[in-house]
Image 1 (cartoon, helix red, strand yellow):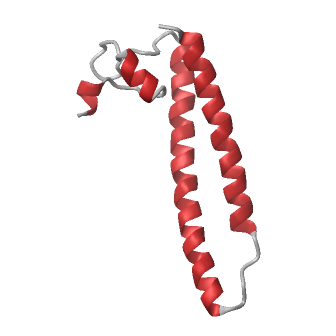
Image 2 (cartoon, one colour; image 1 turned 90 degrees about the vertical axis):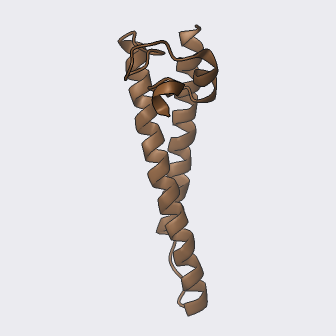
Image 3 (tube, one colour; image 1 turned 135 degrees about the vertical axis):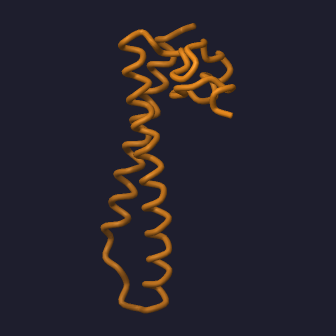
Length: 104
């Protein structure tokens, strides 16, 4: 398994998410319209932005945990059963902490 490849992917995704969170924060800080209809639409968008922000923060947390697992040489080992996480699973979800069997 090419740990450096996964480390680079995790760092790139973390940077991508951090940039997304900055854009979301900027959008949430935009002044709101005084028009009731526009304000209602903007409020709906704000709820979506906040949800995206929460999901982004959760993914960043999972990425940071995966980077920590790389540092302590436990990356690719299931946190629940101790078996190896498949290459296919890590290719799909590089920050995966558990194997497919334990996730079910």
